[in-house]
Amino acid sequence: MGDVINLRQARKARARAEKEAQAQENRARFGRTGAEKQRDADTAERDDRRHDGHRIDDDRDPNGGKA
Image 1: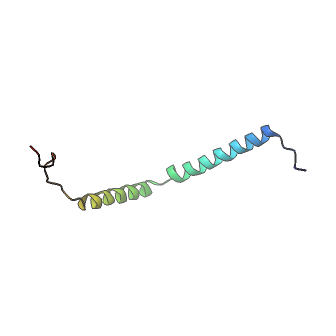
Image 2: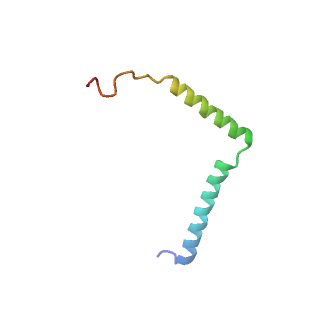
Image 3: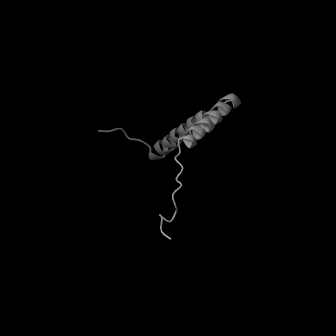
């Protein structure tokens, strides 16, 4: 036969585990130094410029050539 558990305690333990997981995620996301944030911003800007540089300009008529 299975163990008897207190549902209130199990619910609170699950809530604590979820809060700890959220805290872990927040520490990873927001607990960075200024240099790390600047490096990531520079990398994102460089990637955006590179992506825009590969864009093909479409000089066609927006109406599809129709009058």
